[in-house]
Image (cartoon, rainbow, N blue to C red):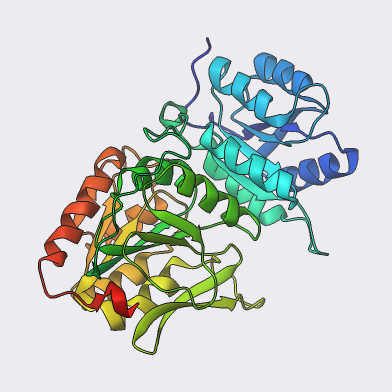
Length: 367
């Protein structure tokens, strides 16, 4: 088995493109080669052709369509990760099938994905370039199947906590789905905290992420809807392409879902927006968790948490697929604890229990 590369080689980032549609393939190639740091060295219209190119050319990154003839994207990904471990960026459609398969591919080791054009939108060339560059820098030794110790459908029926003592807001981007599959199944059903997950994803994809997390965890998990209450033992996943905020309705903490401002280039859903909206209500009872991801989203939110006496936990550099987000928080001395991925769940539980020793904020009967 060939060993994967941890970084793109000196010179241009060498990419193999897997896409069966000639039109989309041309758009992908043109987009990538518009950047002087990227060179497309090969392409294939089906899974077998992609595998042949990967074996012969040993690229720094692969873009992979999911619905290809002869061998689909998921099967192709499995072969790549077992025989020629290479960073893969999935290029998927907005359809239900495409979104569901894209989440599965992230579990099997793909670094990230880009949604193809949909709803009259332009091809996301800038997003594709940024994610290919980030993927090419990834240490492939950190990519692995996101397994869970809990079998699908085997939820514990233990009672929920009787009161809400704190809220945990978890922010993630590139590599986040794999990290969440490691953390969320370890959280107990009776945890006296509400969980909010803000994962950078486009519309349609977050509902499938929520379903997978729900099936593999003890918590009740679903994609957040307008007016959903923050409850102990419940995790809400911010809907892709929209912002999640907190508000109080009849003395009950609920989420408010707002459309993205088309003129803004802010990540959506925004970790900063979510965290800063929770701070005025939960103050020192708010725990922020910043996981792997590109950029700086979460840094401003962590600063607000710090200002109000809450705590922020960051994933460490060694276990982060992309260190940008946790690195920006740690670099600004805003991280109260820095943990490897495997220890973050225990760190969350310990901090929630410590807060839970105080008088509860909300009794469950009121929620």
